Length: 377
Ligand SMILES: Cc1ncc(COP(=O)(O)O)c(C=O)c1O
Image (cartoon, rainbow, N blue to C red; front, side, top):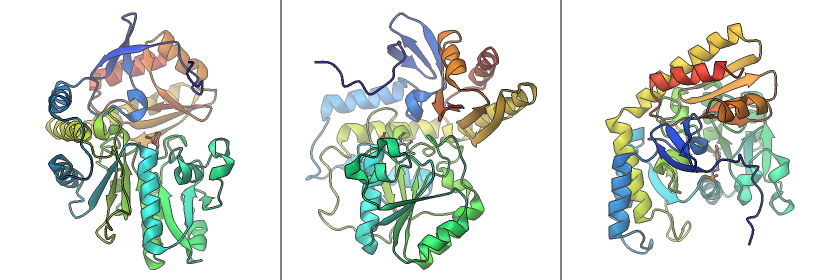
């Protein structure tokens, strides 16, 4: 059997990793400014994470959601404390798309409505309603094009207000820093006004923190830069450093009903043990502060580069979620970064290089990256 060939691949097989470095199967070392697409939060093969996962799998990897799972309760308690949402409730699933799917489903159960507002260029996943909320017609299959979603310009409060005032909008779903959309940032004034309008019209505000959350922006959640508390927050990617896991943080105004949401694998023992280890490491190594500090250095250094290099059109981002917009396609410099400089980065659209390193990136590694980047641009 062949693989279903949907990914354009680099001809490189990554074999092992440690911290912010990975090695291919020929032993070549790479600096990882991509984190396997913003997934590696605490660094590759962190010993505490490896130990926690290994011990748990040796004891019990999985049992169903029909019995008590103290690890889930502990994860909810620890996550609530780490992010400052101790009064919220946690529902655990296996991926980002599932997190958004469940958040929008719960919003619809809550207010009985079926319309979603999403930002132009948004990415929320590839399952049914999550893909419909993703502003990319190429990946919305006819069966998913059900007319639930209106895409609106980022930060254009009048456009959002006009829709919400129709009193039929179920939920607004927002990435406060758009990832796939090219590191476009939601403004504080917009989000604060949006929250007020949503509250007045019984519309649910969902922040998709799957890429920009879990410390990446230099605060636990990106929306915490903007002074707003959403009704639901979706997380995945960094929550378990590569083990598939997602979650929805749900405000106390939503009452759980037995059977309304559910999953086989979500919140399994192995994932919870890994996610608890991730929170230990984030706390012990001050990784949120590190993301703020090293990210500020990188943004500053890249802006300096912009003054000297006409190919750099814009530098955007917060913490360790950074976009460098070029006046040329990203393809050549990104490929040269990998092939000649042995450094992985992400990308967006046609001309944005996206940096999404593990949150433990050191200042020396950040400086090293700037030198490697200078060599290809
Ligand atoms: C902001 C955002 N939401 C949702 C998703 C979907 O997550 P997953 O691929 O785990 O379903 C992604 C994935 O890149 C994302 O960046």
